Length: 220
Image (cartoon, rainbow, N blue to C red; front, side):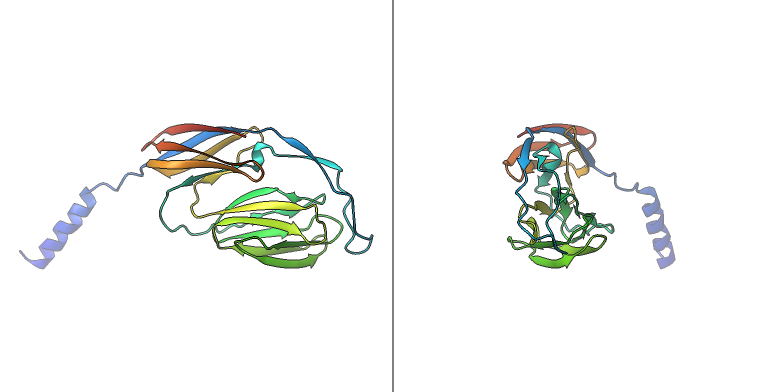
């Protein structure tokens, strides 16, 4: 058989073979939490360029938006998103207080208060100190190591936030009502985890179907 004929047959076979079907399911569920009011520490700093804030004395923490739901056991290399994440400094607090990102994501830390802030982290993982900067300015940091990053402000000791850096993109932060959705999960058996910065971790096995939805819930 001539080489040209062989090439034509190969091309015909490629056209006849259907493309592989995406085998993936969706995980949905609800996270319930008991929120708690937290009293802000009194100001300790002088009223100068780096003066303390004037935020509310009491704020509520611990709701479902401060939980991260994520899958363990998924192998592969996942490129970071082209659009980074954001954690603002507003009302003498980090907003959001809990953030989840894929490793390699760049996080912006804009200052929305009319006084200086300083963003730093010295806990295991990505360590950084972005220095002091005023209202309207922002600093950024790329988080390349999976794990927990605890974010603080050197000027305001009561400011504290958490960034959970994950090795795969199959995670979600619940909305204000506690609902979450993790789409496009490869079919298989996994461990689904929910993490809260003060209340620890919950886990449960899940079997993701080739198509369709599996439901899971967590309570803190």
